[in-house]
Length: 468
Image 1 (tube, helix red, strand yellow):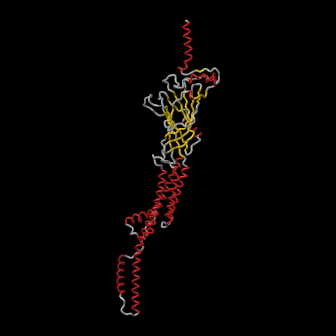
Image 2 (tube, helix red, strand yellow):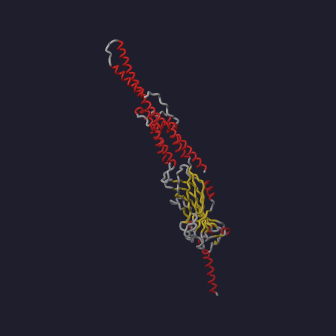
Image 3 (cartoon, rainbow, N blue to C red):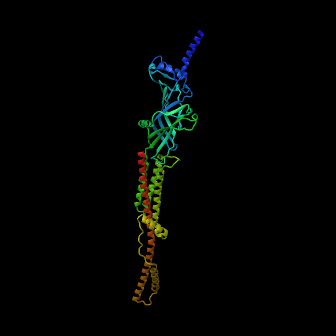
């Protein structure tokens, strides 16, 4: 009986020592309601920091997470990266520990995080290591709940769509999941509503730069149809950011619009003047230098071409086209006398059709001498020339006067033929000049149309981006 009593007492003592490791919770007894006494009572728990804190291995550890977006540090369009600074909080239950707050004098205690098991929660989109300062402590509550709050500098991949730059809105994703444990071991839940996360982030955000936080949404990734032992539980956050376009509008769009407007009003200069072409060449040179200086403000990516790049290219193309048109018009106006008559198709297309469109109808032809009348006058002039060349046999004053008058008539007839020829060439020259003026006004109208459409489009996109 004595031996049995001794074995029974030994078994009871052993169970009283090792039972906490096999129970759902350690019930810690504090010798005094002080922190040193509580820390001493927690010493056995620290030895279990290498295993998941569950009594039964089939029990799933529920990890609750949420974060506060504290700052948007930058967006790299070329590398498709978003750099942000967040405050991450993770909460879970440690089934190996619990105590009486009255007996131990507190219901929570800050302890070194290295003494506890920590879930391996990662962000799938992480592209660099976390360079935020480490936080060596966590909070342990009397009911076994563990609260880990750490800062994280997140450099994540983000599919950036910059087609509407600088009025773009980006949607970046943070996907939280366990790196090693399947859903049967760790499940992740949202610890705070997405609306509250957005409100708190917007209120505490200290660094935004050119970006503005619109909203943060959260949803669980659906894994229906997959084996519960072969997938990782995931919680996805979507962060919507809007670029502040004011700087780009002031530094890029407005100067470009001003320069192209000046080029537009240069059409009011006389086209035959050399100053007009020199003025346009100066504008093109200035616009090229402007684009080179502002090139650092433009996004660089190989996925899509931003609409603003197309706008700048069109502006430069119009300036070059206006310079080429000025060179063409100047050539037509200054050298039209040496050109052949205007071709029939060009006369119909430009003088009749385009001239009506640009409100420059074809000028009425000046009256000319008919071809038959011209031939008759030519024959008469030849006869008079033949007769006039024969000097009179008599040397009387009357005969000499008649001879001089006939000679003068010959000279007048030659002058008349020369004037008729000049009139014919002048009409061809005037037609070429009118072609030049019509083309000049047509490009002027296209310029006005392009600037109007561009201004209206920019204003609409800008207003809509701020109303979202």
